[in-house]
Length: 393
Image (cartoon, rainbow, N blue to C red):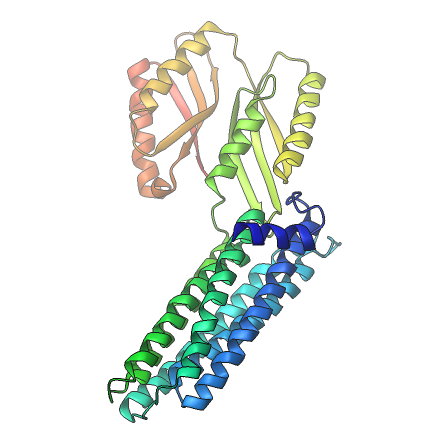
């Protein structure tokens, strides 16, 4: 199938390999939406014909489910168009989150459809209706299955290519449709050999699949709207790229804001030596912001944190402190280490990044107590001033 997928992409998407371009992303979204609409509408017509002809609640339920999928395809096309609107004074980071909002509205409509059909299916179980087996209807249902498989795999393929949460969610939805359609076909076969209300039970199962799909899609979309943690691979790439620049020896306080698929606003602090001319460091930081931002397709802002690195005493104390902190549960890293005071009464000033699970008042109190004990282990005369940070990824 990959050959067919690549053919469609090359045929209908200009500059298809430049997936970081918002215009190219929009073209992928349109292609996925159009293919989805055509296939879902075809399956909808087939199932409506069979469902109404046989008076089958399970087949009719799946037909209406495919109607919501067809509508979803239209929403996908519209949302990619709206999401690609240029930034303006009211929305300086663009309209990328429109994709999440439309996905949420669609997931809510799926939940409503599932609820209505589970009511109808229960009624069919309580008041059975005979469903005659018909070979033509059966063959029409079989015809819908390969179409559904093609759509699920194609949507997943292009969703992965452009890293679109909406298309990936749609692909999962289509996989569920394959299971549902298979269940309907099996119930159609079973109805030939029994008078039990198989159609009603199959309708309940189909409805439960619909409700589950709606719930999963709703949860995933809400995660993005509420501020889902960024992909760990993206975080790793940002660290690796920024640390590759001369003079930058450490990175911390990384914050990533998601303004829609492919739209990230990123800020971080970079540790640099304090004895390098400020203009030279500034040029390096400017270069890193521009080049890393373009390479990873994000808006990057870097704050400089100068530190003194050439003092043997500071290097030795930092190494000792890192050894003490490494055994304290909940501490991920240390940064902005500096030393003030005379030989007999030094104060160690530093920040520690605390794991999310330990970022509460009780846990932070325990961590602070253990840090102070660790500093005393280095020297009873030393004090410490600690700032606790939380990671946002």
